[in-house]
Image (cartoon, rainbow, N blue to C red; front, side, top):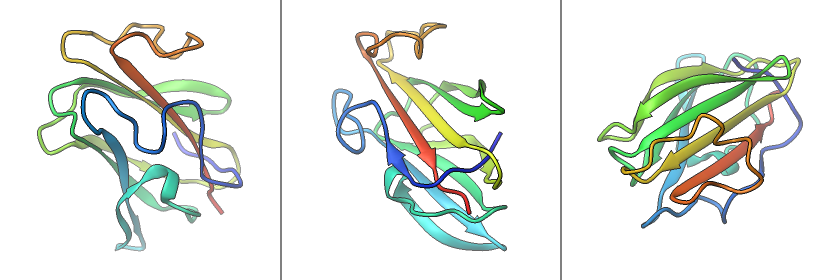
Length: 140
């Protein structure tokens, strides 16, 4: 589920690229018209996306940890993916940016012994052993 806004902003969470017993970063590779235009770049550093851009996410330094990705779809958060972060960090789905409505992503990554709580994004602060990040993407 993809949509649009005015700026790439890192919202609640730690400093850019979050930390969880070692550096963990969420990055994206963006393909436009069949060409890679941005590769392995932290989401907060992406800049503007074009309508129709395809994006893949990679979570570095978190192999095997439980993760969840949600996207904003028409004002509601929708679970896009949940599972163990793959060894290479590439999450097994792609997203397409579309102009006209807000595009936002949020990611939770927890320690291996901590399954992700169903309400992980509902709390004011991240549950112990988990990190949460939210980004609003600029799609033009």
